[in-house]
Length: 331
Image (cartoon, rainbow, N blue to C red; front, side, top):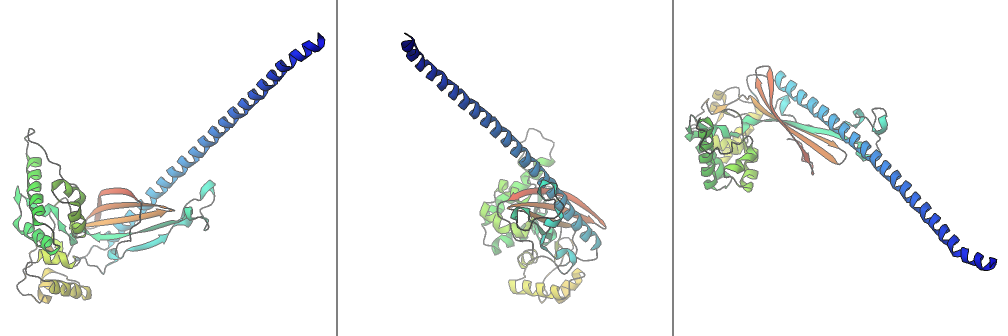
């Protein structure tokens, strides 16, 4: 019996041993899972802290770049604005990694072997009055025929469909008329705040991409600066000016910028040109600032619009975006 009973207890002992091993394995899995979860939470906290620090550093640097642009524009307030002045010189990509804190709270010196520590700042200032202003198209509740004709010449020069310009003009007129009306029952169309918003008013994506370097949207009517406008814009705002004469005007102003409209009138070879102070100028009040900060594989771009009134430079708008492919600095 003893032997028989001993043999009978052997499978039970084996079962108990298997249960103990299974329990031990479950405990090991539970501990490993908890440890992995704790490590993941710690890694996530580090990543969140790193991202927050990068965001704050980026904001500081881009704000500093904007303040630098404001200082340049304030100190450069003269009787005329031209492309030979300090504000027109773009900032080539400049390495700022040595001024950013490295990981793990180390000194403000980056590790040259780690590309994630690389930081570069670039950008520049553009004269927004070197472009056709959307705000010039409508005034006093009606279309401005002179400005509409200038836009028509630009569309014709760039081989763009005139029908889109007609739709844009009528949509702008309707939007401004309803926005100024107190009739709350009337449908309110979307009023554009930037050039990209003109897609709401009838311009196709291809047309927007083509005219983007030549147009802007400012809060008031502005004349075109003859010292900074490209040949296409000069041809648009000066009826009768052909491409050869526009390029000659650009070459002449590069040698000696126009100090007044009378200077431009004297040097032009086309005596039939008429310079109107309401539409033409040699001075600018509105400027665009583009700043790009590249941190490792990420590039943050900020676009700002500034208005200069004497020595006072006011920031009208700021917009940030993350670029998947960095663009070249302003030329």
